[in-house]
Image (cartoon, helix red, strand yellow):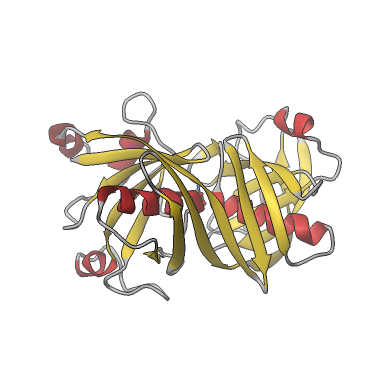
Length: 289
Ligand SMILES: N[C@@H](CCC[C@H](N)C(=O)O)C(=O)O
């Protein structure tokens, strides 16, 4: 089974080309593949196939809004094997992978996701280093909520970026005090407010057009970056300043991205790196049930 490994601001993924949709991405297999000791190690898995082929195979019950049968579809799984609707860093790596392998020749196209079609512009994809802008679509305010983390309460805003986020701006935080927070344990949150779990972002207020953010991801744990999370963070940071549109540089432990918000929609621009390609032993994979 062929694979590639890549990351977007160090949020890393195993990319699985599966154009005939033959792979059964069971929870044990995805967990093993993402395990950093017994597998390849990754925050998530990106299966590469056309949306129509996934629908014919029964992986998709129907084609999500803005997605046609002939669009490439990013079939995303978290490291714990759970499904998630969208992965902002993953879409950049996915688009870069398509061009680097010649599966796609256009610089502008739609990547399908369970959160709908995501138009991308690939600014560069020559070799291992890429740069991609993703139209992340609508960003929806879910109202106020709070997270408990490292013995502290962080007030924030629930934000739907296709997947659920709780973005907490702490105006007293500095980059240094943010980096000192202990994010090893899953943050506490209101399960009534987030019945399907939530990705939690802790961030500083905007300073010189930028924020610093860390994230604890649903289905993964703390990651070096979360693309949908940076969109949620930028939305909350602008809201904290009394604005609902603008451009925010979001600095995460794995690098930085640029989020632009206007009329309730977001774009995300950032890097993609393709690190390696290889093969997974089929007998190892098949033995995982
Ligand atoms: N890292 C991703 C988000 C992946 C899904 C998330 N963990 C969830 O369960 O919603 C990103 O870059 O957006």
